[in-house]
Length: 130
Image 1 (tube, rainbow, N blue to C red):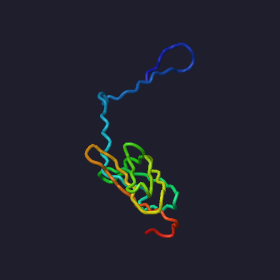
Image 2: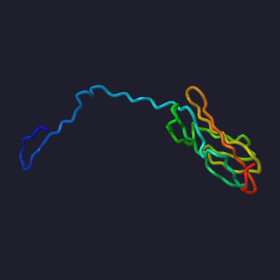
Image 3: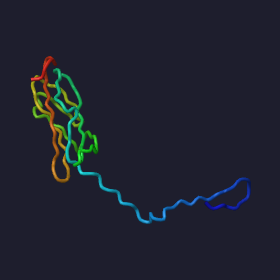
Image 4: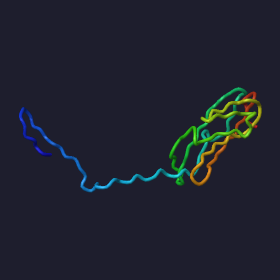
């Protein structure tokens, strides 16, 4: 701090902030490459006819550490049997007719496409899965 001279009451100070060893910008490390995705919930889904639920996806790096929870592009959801369940781009699953199928989440990376799937049963009663 350096005192400043001037008129008026009270002290005036100039504060100089600097970093002697920070002459060059510090490069930021790139984000970790996604290594796997996991659909949440991790167990199968049972729905009544006409019912809806949402699924999410957790993205993990090579060490298994979660790096993101995402919905929407570039993440894509598809139903293996759209006549049984429909799924939209946000992971909203809708039961269309009685039956069973899988919903698949896929995430393209620079080197491959990561996928995970979840079993979905559409039933008239929710007393037990097939």
